[in-house]
Image (cartoon, rainbow, N blue to C red):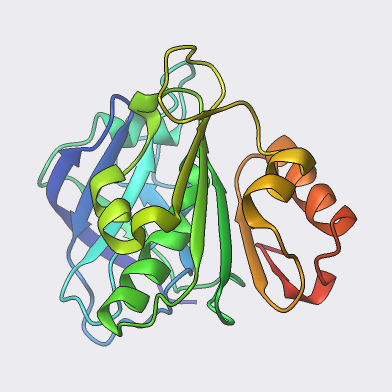
Length: 223
């Protein structure tokens, strides 16, 4: 497996704890929308600390992009990356991952679990193939929503937000559970479901979808 040493070209805050990183792209590097790689920050003591992150750029772009949430409550890789600066270097490996577009359907993301879907949705928009696909995006507060304007532009009214911890939100309130899925989606056969998020979120959503009649073979998630 190859390793690539890359320089951070740009860093842009997207929310209070999420940054967009634009990196150099190795010549001939290939990946598919939805795939990830392992990333380590080339700082003393952190070179061997590799973590998986999803490419959010398109394969046709001449740079690599990652959108990374920093968990600042503990000393980890994401906190270190959150403090990284333009000019710092990271190391990545080859692309891997089992989340890829299989056909029109419902994308269901919890928090930073949106990242595998960003490149897929951007790719579909570029090819004018969004079709009837929709996105359900769950977050704790309005301020946690990543790339709201871009996702709204791609999906229009098929972009649903649900907020769990903010009482005055204008979006749907609560959790993505069986009742919510039944109310918002309507039918569960003959379409794909793409699911990504924290462990508890995944368990609740996958269980709800199966109870509602979704075909297990139509569930797309990281295995």
